Length: 142
Image (cartoon, rainbow, N blue to C red; front, side):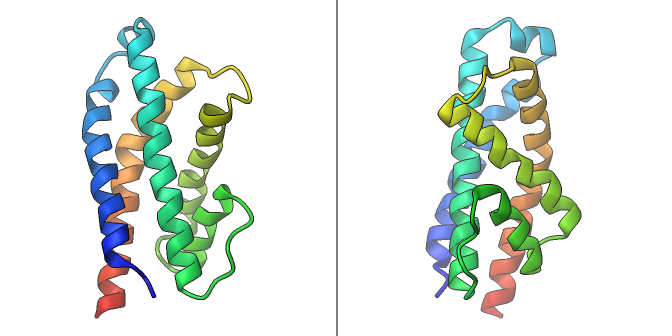
């Protein structure tokens, strides 16, 4: 059974972090790159938002009777298969899973310029993700 309260709580937290990251997204690239605190904050906000989206993905998929996806990237693709959003959007937002893994596990040196681009993309893509998930919850309860 889909736990609407769990998903709504995570969406609220994502929204709070999204509002915080907006100030970082509004900086010029030079301003952003000039501040280590800006970079650390952006990484942490992205990590939290992406992690919560992944939690939502897994919950929606498993509670809809799907097998758990093999990885975080696939969880975004599988939501498109479930009809939550279009595949084009899924391909775009699924890339955030790789960024989350690089931030969390420090697989590679994190390129601050790429993170800057990611906060710009997140400012557009995450609200869209949230709208799709909210529409999905509305459709389920109808």
